[in-house]
Image (cartoon, rainbow, N blue to C red):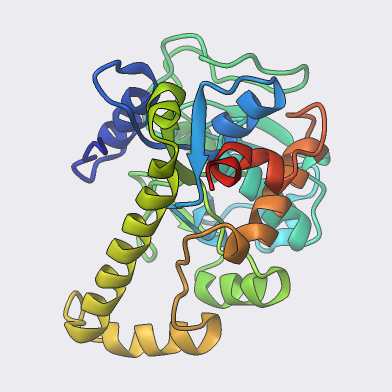
Length: 294
């Protein structure tokens, strides 16, 4: 049911597409934002589970030009920032972070396009007035390096990024400290994807939502235990895990509704504030079918 992404960004996008468009599968990993928009419009073709396979803090994703005018977060007020999407889950959390550091997302001049691929096709999303797309043949990274943008927000690192020698650098080189402060003050380790089931699969066996959530939770616990037992991905992963658990608790990537309630509410509130939904969708509405399944 769940399709592998093989680790690449394009493959992950294809996995998300197939989760809801391929009739051969009954569900999979999907965008929290796209699910939210469907709930807002009364579209109940999919049943969301409180399983969040992708989370990401966002200070690390903010890039600027080496030697450019942006030296601190305050310098971004009213400036031009490029993003890969205007309405994706990550871009909602990006605005949430900007508010946290004292910036008004409405005062930013947004540019939406591909980070490294030269622009050649129309956007698969309607951009509101005042939001721009690159000219044909231009990428957001190219525009940043040329001084046509002051920053870009990007989940994958731009190809021209290098902390010491690249023309593109992070605005927050020590992003971990910024993200730790964000977590301590907001309680959010931003979830971006969830697991969904096709309604017909859920209707046939409503118990499957709870059972699958329990199975994913058990798998997540096994993965966490394996990390702690064999922390060899980097020489100091054990120290990193200990620091993270001291800050965020032993289960810092939790599944389940109640342990993620405040983050779901913050996500839905930000989407409403940005005008992406007609109302502030509640946690109970977001997971109504899951709760009904009992």
